[in-house]
Length: 290
Image (cartoon, rainbow, N blue to C red; front, side):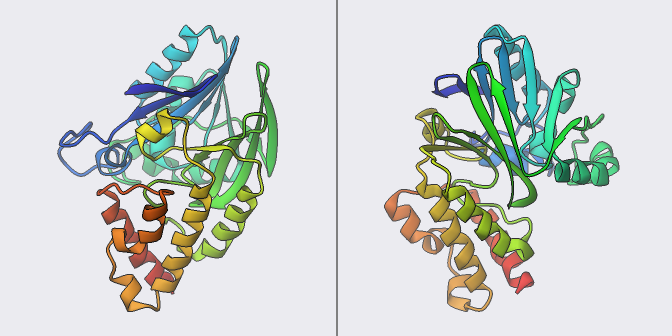
């Protein structure tokens, strides 16, 4: 796991995108065939004695290393924010079981609903996450926090998942996007909610965003400060084209490069081959949803 520092007071803990390497098993599993293959980051915002952790990564081992790092900075008051309920974002929760863990109410509902399957390794296959530590501090809509001298605002949106929480630092214009924005392309989990995804992407674009830090993206871009706000528009266009592809055979049959040719040409997205499989699944789900 690499520790990147894209901005003052901000740390990214990045793992994955290591060609030919698997982290958990040669057999199919949600770590290697998901977040690790695509590349995944969790983040920390730290100032003085306080640190706010955004997601707990792929495993307890990842989470413990994150915790040791922020504590080495002098942070003694730690809090955790969960971006949403998916496994590659909550797997390390146990390492923070003694600190305040914050999520929107919908995230807790999803985790409770799927807890037995997650802890038995039958939710998305192995490995199991057991025990699954649940968030104890809940919010609805928006929540304002302070981390040392830094102001942080949490926003509940329905993009990628209906329980997404994005984290915004108004003074620096930094948006921590979770999985609401992704490079190369978003992973479609709830195609029936496309219209709501678009509405909430439009709502995000109204924030005074300077740079975007997604959980899944190019590590070099993240290390260099993150993505431009154009990532939001690129994602909107991709979702609209997915919706069109349900009734457009030519669009439906394009590979990922052809599907996002404009975004690649303008540099708002970068091509990473493992996203071809994600794209094919997205197209299939869009067609099923009609």
